[in-house]
Image (tube, rainbow, N blue to C red; front, side, top):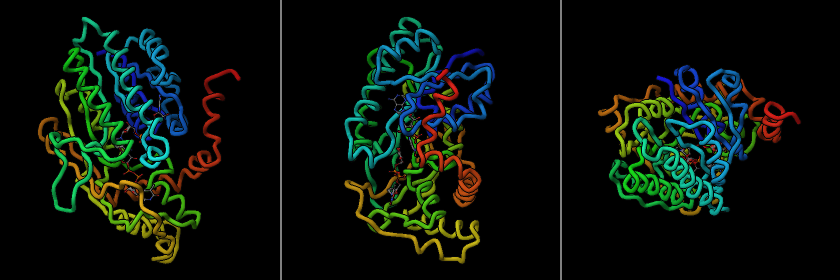
Length: 352
Ligand code: NAD
Ligand code: DAU
């Protein structure tokens, strides 16, 4: 069936994997990647699909209501998969307002523009909001998990802004009958991950023999999911998720930060031909993140039971694949650290 789908944030880490999956898997769909190309947006993530006939890139900022309205009028989407966000917790601590603008106001703009476009004809439409497990707050080291009914308890400006956007999505469903679905996912890892986040930062620092900063004692626990498994879950939920429902997505794969980094160091030693234990000498304990949540752990049994999704990769295998990608794509990281990636759009998409 022909459909036009707007994917917001498609130039980012997870968004680029979702765009690639949809463009390749659904040639009958028109995929419109709507992205403002902030520091986190990188069109070089999508060079392999850039010339596909069912792919279009539109540079637009979700905080700009008029601009978004114009894009929706032009493309008349049947579906929206909304990933665009400010996503880095540390940045939310230094500049919370950027997170309020994009994650709260931007999401409300998209909801309202979609509501106006779909007014009176919601049948067959879908607004899919991609959210995070961080909205549920922090768990103790007690074996409990976040389920879909866990009370929201955000602690960082990032998670508060994502919580707020989730509430607005549900409010548009309950008030205006918007056909929405939400998913809350745990930490992703894989290729094209911006090198400010723990795993790609550590890979890059190890490669260059620079210190690996570990916040606090490294005892915080995250549940890691390979990014392609998240993209597959998004595909399944977009197509078969129940209207108005929420699905948790996770890897059932908990690691303390320090154990994860030790594993990464030993993989890097092997890949770089270093003596075992060499890279681990770079581990450096630094001041803890303010309000640092102790543990996240997702129960994704609803998604597995109702929609038949399950994670495909063991962590060791996924981490090794990730390291291989970063070592084979050093130029990708170098163009980010030099800032060169930000000129790509001008070179490819404008006449300047
Ligand atoms: P990212 O930071 O890598 O990418 C964000 C993308 O959004 C970038 O391409 C950026 O240019 C775009 N963007 C930012 N502000 C925009 C604006 N105002 N208008 C239009 N585009 C804008 O993020 P990510 O890690 O890929 O996360 C994507 C989504 O998934 C986010 O909503 C995030 O909250 C959620 N999420 C992420 C993870 C994770 O582990 N990374 C886990 C669960 C949920
Ligand atoms: O849980 C899902 C969330 O995962 C997403 O919603 C966020 O968008 C995404 O950024 C991620 O948030 P985290 O804060 O968990 O990811 P980050 O890679 O920043 O940090 C992972 C853990 O590592 C966390 O406990 C903080 C710690 N850390 C992070 C960095 C950048 C360090 O110890 N040192 C570091 O330098």
